[in-house]
Image (cartoon, rainbow, N blue to C red; front, top):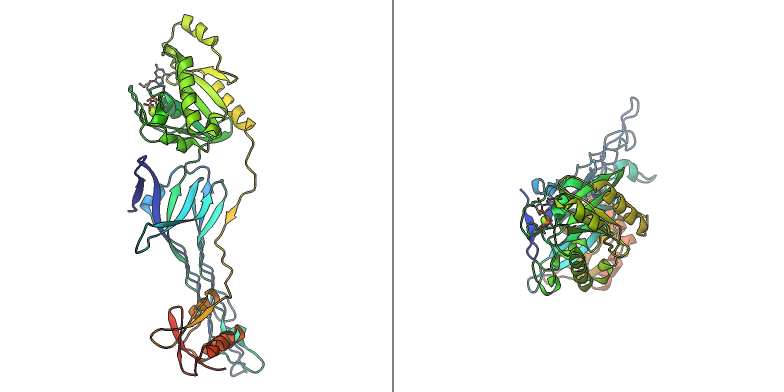
Length: 434
Ligand SMILES: Nc1nc2c(ncn2[C@@H]2O[C@H](COP(=O)(O)OP(=O)(O)OP(=O)(O)O)[C@@H](O)[C@H]2O)c(=O)[nH]1
Ligand SMILES: [Mg+2]
C-alpha cells in the first residue's frame, strides 16, 4: 500500500510519494558468424534492446491520484540482450501512467540540517502533456560494431545501461475550469452531485463540505471539471467560518457558478457579501465571469417565483433552479458553456516535458583524500557502466575513449602515474597510458 501525504492545512489528500524504476538496457552480444567452409566468420553480435521508460501523461479524465495508493512502485520492462546474426534484442515496453491535469512532479531532498528542499521537475497543467519520469537504459552495442581492418575479432560487447530510478512526490494542484461558490447550505454540493458523477457529502447544516470536491461534467459533447468548495460567509477573509483558504483551490478556474438559496430573505445581499469576500481574496478571481444559480426554487410559491424573475445580478446570466428536482439545470449548463467559451483559451500548444538527457561531456578530475584520483562527469560515468571491466578488449576501448576526451591528459597534469587507481562513478580502474 502506498502512503498518502495529507496537506494538513486543508486536509485535502492531494500528494502521493512514488518510486519509479525504468527498464535496464539489454547487453550487447559477443558472437561470430558460423559458415560451412569458413572456420571463423566475422563478429555478428547484435545490440541489446532499449529499456522501457516511465512516462506520466496528463489526462482530462483522471481526477485523482488515488490509483497510486494501490501501486506506488512503478516498473518498466527491461530490454532483451542482443542475438547472433546481428539480431537486436527487443526493447522493453514503456510504461505510460495517466495522471490528472494539474499534477506536479516534485523531488524533495532533506538535507542533514535545515528544511527539506523541493524541486518541481514538471507541471503537467494541460491535457496531453507528458513527462519522462524515468528514462530506460540504452542497450549495449554488440561486438559486430567493433571490428576494424586491423582488429577483426573483437571479443567484447557493451553492457546495457541501467534504467533511471527516481523517487518523487506527485502533487495534484486541482485544476477545475468551473468553481462552485456560495453561502453554507446553499446547495453547492447537491448541484455538483447532479451535474457530475461526484458524490459529495450533502446535509442540512452549514459547513457540510470540509474539503473541496471535484466532478467531471459531461454536457452536450463538452466536458469540464467543476469544483465545489466549503461555504463562504461574510468575514471569511478574516477567518470567519472556514475562512477563505479554500479559494486557492478554485484560483485557476475560468468560470464561477454562484449558488444562491432562494429560501433566504435577501439573496441580493448574499450575492454581494460573497463577492466582497472573493475580491478581498483575489481580484482576478472576483473578475471571472459568473453564472448565477438561484437554487431551491421548488420551495417557493408561484408568487415569490414571479418576484424572483425581476432580480438582476449585474450583467451575469441568472437561472432559477432546483438541484433536487433537476429543474433548470440544462439552461444553467448552457450558460456555463457560453461563459467558458468567452474566456480566452490558453495557448493550444501541448508541452512535452523531459529532463535534459543529453549526455554531458563535461567532467572534473581531482585527487582523492585516501590516495588515487577521481573523475566525475555524466558521460564518463555512463561509459563505465556500459563497459565490461573484466574484458581486456572492452577496457582497451574505454581507455581510447578516455584519451579522446582528454581525461588521460588532465589526470597526468595533476600528477597521475601509470598504475594509480582512478575512481569513476561506482567503479575504480587503473590509470593507463595508451
Ligand atoms: N428543497 C431543496 N433543498 C435543497 C436543494 N438543493 C440542496 N438542498 C438541500 O440543502 C441542504 C444543503 O445542501 P448541500 O448541497 O449540502 O449544501 P452546500 O452548499 O454544499 O453546503 P456546505 O457544504 O455546508 O456549504 C441539504 O439538506 C440539501 O438537501 C434544492 O434544490 N431544493
Ligand atoms: Mg457542500
